[in-house]
Length: 330
Ligand code: SF4
Image (tube, rainbow, N blue to C red; front, side):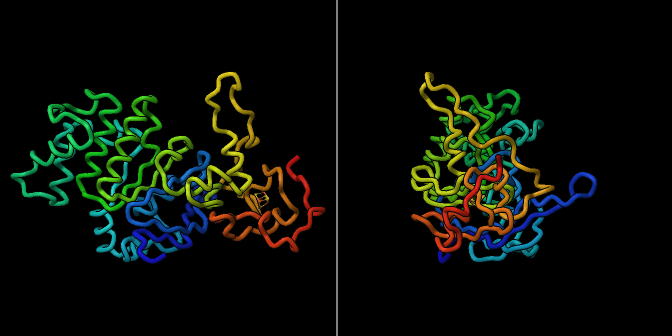
C-alpha cells in the first residue's frame, strides 16, 4: 500500500515445539499500517498475535515472507536494516515489572535508552528524562525509585516513557494494560490516545479485551490460528462483523447489564492446537455455518462491505448453494 509505514506480506513463523513437532504460529499474514494509524490485533490466546508482533520487530525469527518498514526490507536479516528498525520502533510489554531492569531506577532505565540511541547530548539526559516522565504523567521526583517501589500503573507509564525515548515511528503494545486494574487501564489507554495524536505514532495494539480495542484503534485485524481472518475499520468490524469467528468473539463480550449475566460460550470451547491445524478453514470444527468446502479448501480473502474477510460464505453464490450448507461441528 503506497505511503505505508509498515507492510507485511505473506509472513510465516514456524518453529519446532515439544517433541520436535512443527508449530505453525503465524501463517500467510499480510497487512499494511499507515503513519499515525492504530491497528488492533485480536484473537484468543495462542492465535499467534504476540509471535507476529515480535516477528515484525525482529525480536523473533521469520520463516518466510516480507516485512518492509518505512520502505526498507527488514525481514531479510540485513544488519543495517535491523539496526534502523531498532532505532525507530519500540515494544511495550504486558508485565510492567518484568519489562524494567529491577536494579536500575526509573530515571536510569529511561536514560539508558537515550544514551544507547544517542538521542540527546550527555549533558541533557537528565533534563530529557524529566520531560519524558512528565509526558507520561509521572512526577520526575520518582526518577530515583526502583520499579518495585512503584505501582503497576506507574511502572507501565515508565515503560511507555522508555519506549517514547527512542522517538519511535511505530510502537507495538502487547497486552500492555491486561495486568492492570480497570481504573489504571483507563488512564493508560487515555495516555496512549493522547500520545498517538500528539506524536503521529503508529501503534499495533495486541489485546484480547475488545472494549479497549474498540476505543483505541482505527482498524482491527482478527487472528485465528495464525491467520488474519477479518480486517477492517473498527466501526465496520464491531458494527457488522462478517466472519463467523469475529461474530462469535463479539457475542462473547460481557454485557454491562448485570441482569443479563455472562454470555454463553459462543465460541464453543478451545481452538485446535497450532501443532495440528485443521485442513481447509481452521475454524471449521467450531463454525456453526460450515460448508462442505470448508473442510477442504482454505478460504481466500474477499472485500465485503469495506472489510477483508477469509470465509467461504462470501464466495460467489454459484459455488455453494443453500442446500450444500451443513453443520459439521455437531
Ligand atoms: Fe465457517 Fe466455512 Fe467461513 Fe470457515 S470458511 S468461517 S468454516 S463458513
